[in-house]
Amino acid sequence: MRVTKDCFVEDTYFHIYNHTVENLLLFREDADYLNCLNRFKKKVSTYPASVFSYCLMPIHYHFFIRQDSEKPIYRIFNDVFAGYVQYYNRKYERKGVLFQNPLQHRILENNDYALKLSLYIHHNPIKAGLINSPEEWKYSNYLEATNKRNSILFSNDILNNNDISLEEYEKLMNEYKKSEIEKEIDEYLN
Figure 1 (cartoon, rainbow, N blue to C red):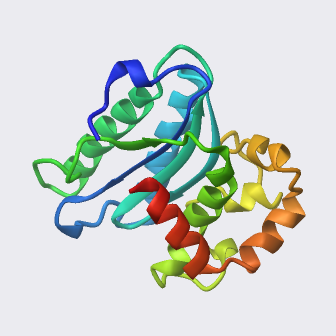
Figure 2 (figure 1 turned 180 degrees about the vertical axis):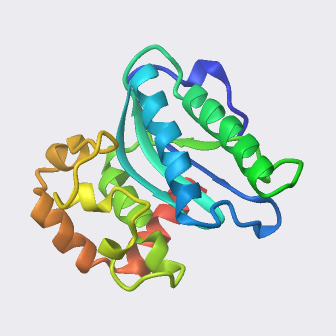
Figure 3 (figure 1 turned 180 degrees about the horizontal axis):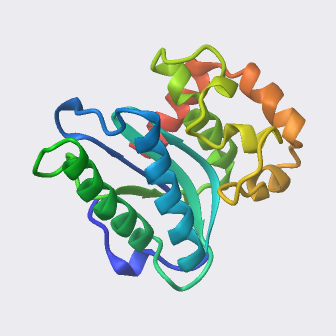
C-alpha cells in the first residue's frame, strides 16, 4: 500500500508492518533490537501516538498504533528505520535497502478486530517457533499488556474499550486459537 499523507489523520488506528528483502536478518543481536526500540521511543514523543501492540521479529516487524495528533505517524517509522538502516549497514558493513517494500500499513476501520490484532501481533514469535510462551519474547510489549514490565510503548485503551483487564488479556493469549483468529485477521487485512 502506498503511504499517502491524507490517510494519516488524528484518531486513526493502523497496523504498520514491513519485511526485509530476501529474508535478511533485520536484527542480528540484542543490541540491534534495543537500538531500534530506543529510536522508536524518542520519536513517539515527537509524533504523539498510542502503541497498543508491537513485535520486532528477526526479519519483520508489526505495530498496532493510533495517531494521536495531526502529525502523521508514518514519519515516526520513516525516521526510525532510515536511521536504523544506516546503523545496520555501517555495523554489518553492507549497503542498500533492508526492506522489500516501502512502509506497509492498513487502516483498522473495524474496531472488532482491535483486540484480535493485538493477540495476533503478540503471538508472532510463537508462530515463528522462536518461543513457547509470549512472556519469553523481550521485543514486544506483551509484558506491558500483562503488567509485568513498564514502558511508554504501551497503551491499554484497546483493552479498556473492550472491558478486558490485563489479567484477562493474558488469559486470552493463553487460550489463543491460532487457526481462528489468525485466519480471521488475515482475511480482514488482505
